Image 1 (cartoon, rainbow, N blue to C red):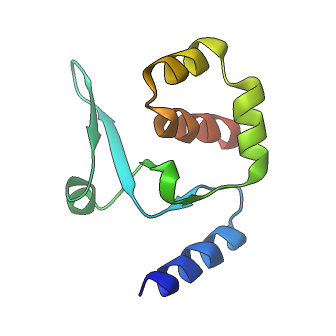
Image 2: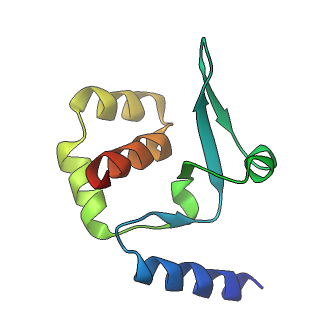
Length: 99
C-alpha cells in the first residue's frame, strides 16, 4: 500500500510539478480573531486543504533554491530560531509564486 501511495503521489506531481504534492494535509482558515491550523481528521471533514507537511511532499528543487535565497530574512530567521513552521512558510511562499 505504501509503495502504491508513493507511486500515485509521484505520478500526480510529475503531471503538476509546479505544485506541492504530499500526504499530510493541513488547513488554515481565518476566524474573526485568529487563524486556525487544522490537521486530520478536521481536514478530511472539511474536504479541502491549503498546505501539506514538507516531510512527506514532492517538491520541485527550484522552490527549495528560491525559498533559501528569496524568502524574507525575517521569516527565515524566525523559522531557524524556533525550529518550526517551515512547512507553513514554504506552502505560502509557493502559493505566492504560483498565484
